[in-house]
Image (tube, rainbow, N blue to C red):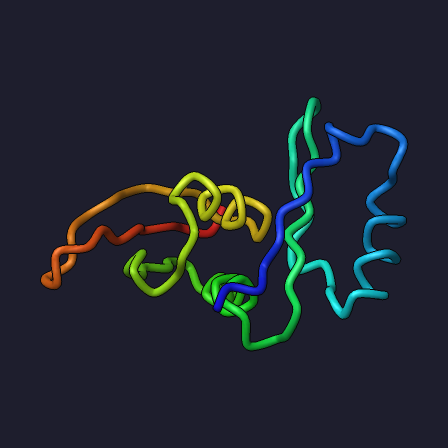
Length: 109
């Protein structure tokens, strides 16, 4: 069961990220990642530390290169790339695993 939730700050301009985190906490959620660009801000919320969003964030542990199969996580590749960027990584390649699923390769900036 996926316990992560996405909130797009652009749709509620008067609600700060801090306020969203406060409200999320009342529902047992915490901010797992906070990223965006000049026009949008995205907060990734998770319910528990063993959720897939927290596990994905742990992949980006400071190693110079990170490689994993997408089937390990239930997120679209573009969201994974944004989460990686939040942790200081950049996508440098995609490949197929022997099991047939895609995998992503990142390097630390």
